[in-house]
Length: 440
Image (cartoon, rainbow, N blue to C red; front, side, top):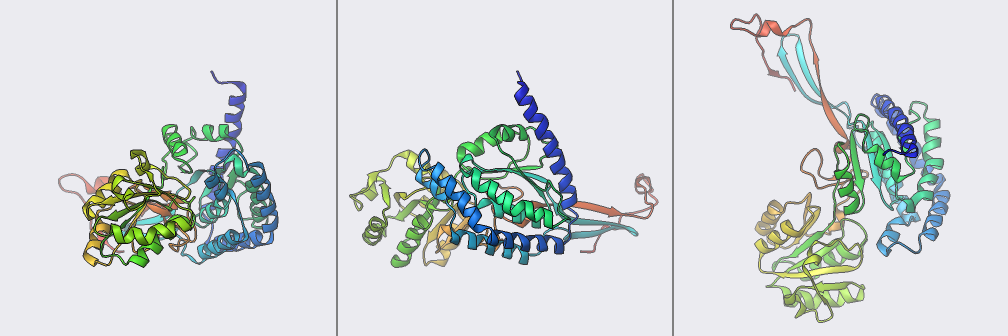
């Protein structure tokens, strides 16, 4: 039975979503110059009001000191360095080519009947993210540049941070840029609103969940709206016998400790049996010094006496902290099979100095991002040169890997004629014939 409170939530949200969808139609016609001017002002407002944003974030941190795990608390925290990178990301988005209005193809169907395929914004996008206030400017910069509109909800842990960003960045930006519609960026406040939003497929064109496996699975199971995202970040590195020892240790350590709460942090290290004794003698002291807790397979335990025994569950676990699963594998094929079986198809890499082996690994591993001889932490929209990312997708359609501007556009066909009708092209003796001449 639907309660009066639920009914009220649905009615109010339906109105908000309708306005947001109307805002999308206005966003879709913005010029590149208007988008870039708005983005430049966004970057300026973030820099001018960073102290207010940091103060609100400190309130969130103090409120959530207990009750959430360390990895979530790390994601929640803003600092000057993060804000500098966020501003740089917006500046990078400004420099990128406008993804909308590109001519993707042009075909003459007949004389005076020309078909064009052009890139267009996706529509109204619903985004649900957890304790990551730095996601706000990433989302909004990409939404703005791609000409979309957004309805989004952050975790309750980030309530003050998110509201401060709306108050000191989004609202003054929208007021200053009179060509931006009022409802281009709508922040939802409750889980009930999110649950209700999932039912409005007539307004929302795509949902992007950024958070836990539980969140993603819940979204997928409770909506008819297309969902773009990934459930887990179980990332691997495989150390091949041809790898440079010092380089392999350095890359593995960076992949784990540089930001262990990130979805592209290393969770399972696979070491070829041929190099295991030498590698572990070099790796173990460094891992211990960095505070990494190891969970090892029975064969690896012989080289890592301080490690805890790994269970089957460890091969599919995204720790999000300084815990690392370690396994000795028999060969390249064994490593690839482990990754494709237990991984989350997010980001996986090989450390080797054999070009043939490297090519095999890159081809055989079924992940959105596959690396060789570098840290898994490079799997990021900003580092890929996308300016930022709306999220990371492990899907095989539409967009895959870090999703930037190109993942936020679709295309439409535009056909222009001068009076043609289909009846002239059908029958045993048609009056007209298609030329199907490719022009672009």
